[in-house]
Length: 272
Length: 321
Image 1 (cartoon, one colour):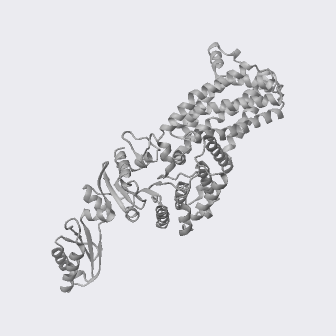
Image 2 (cartoon, one colour):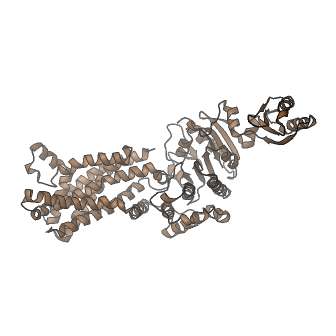
Image 3 (cartoon, chains in turn green, red):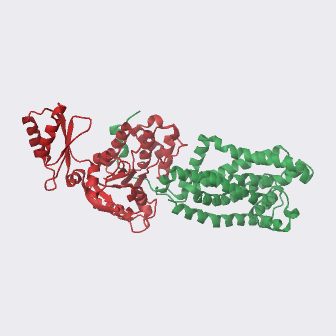
């Protein structure tokens, strides 16, 4: 073991001019860099990012395709925009899980004592998460195209749909971040998150149009913000989206952020 | 949470404006007094339940941003990101303190070298030894050298060699002008690192002074005499007790005697007492193979001041430099 060296030690800890405090954006980007480093050092954590999108898209296309739409190919045209949303939304739970783990590890004590915007670590985490959402989106779209998905909306439509899904997912992430600040262990956050995600994604128009559902379920599906997201995403990919559809999806994202971001930041500030 | 605000007030008192950071003071108190809580409040990590705390004249709640620019904290538990390498951890914090990427990398390299961590630079923190992690944690706290550094039990759980390395770092940081407030479970640590110590019990400062003054005020020292012949033990015990005016005790299983020496007017006049007692033993033909004269330990000081013992592990000493 090397002992700390005398002169070098004194030189290293001597007082010196300090740099100007860093801004919110720069700090958030630095935390985004941290998230990417963590993925690089622990690539296993991408198993979900890769596995969930591929499994969902393949399973539902070939399991339900024949029964619901006559053929997997026909069903794929309907399912894929929903499958994109489903795959990405399932990943949002990890925003809360990761934060909860970081808080338990004491890493955030250091961040919280720095002269940076208090929300920067969370904002940076969301940036890293958005990177994972984009990766998952690319996998779903790539797989879809490989097995016969034909988006009539073209590249622009597909990219716009992916953008919308990532925006919505980042908004929903705030809810899990709040949950991650309330619950005590990462596994509790994961259980609670997935338990809530199942109805949120299945009681929607991802798999089937709500028309065949009983009235009460249809009402729930129509109120579900995920339904608005998938309607807009489908519209964009097929080139038939209306401004209203996109606005509804954006409004749903804004509402989720407006409710959960202040709640999460408030919980974060008061966290011991 | 009792004891939180008195602790904060003490810090303010201990550092009169205009004094150089060579002033060293500290406090000693049991764990329940809120040692870690105090530090977390002063580092703006926790809001006090009541009262106010000021650091460099700035309110830790209302002016938290201003406080954070001047202070740094190394918590009781490892704070480095285990997935990242040692160097990445320091670069990350350098960026967050406002360094450019280039400066952040240069500063990380400089600190890793100085703290004896160069070989660990590109290893994930998870793979580092406890001593290395502790030094990395302290390095992370001085990326931008703070005016005030909080160290919460910086050597808990370290082996003696690692502990000495941390002491070297703390001394260097203090010598370079940073004020350090540290807590420790090791009385020896505060004894070595602090010039001034205050004793806290149940949230109240009950004594303050240098380590020597506190020991003197506790009013006791101790003498330990090693005899050549066990047969002379009883005779020697009687002589010592008479000369010192206090009962000498036989140490079980040894040929040694020990006695606690009382204070005279607040200062233990150990020299005179002991010289006379040893001379008397010699005159009586009792062979002394060795003797040791010691000031009271801070454990004894704590007991004398509070009336209850400071058990290892439940006692904390906090030093302000």
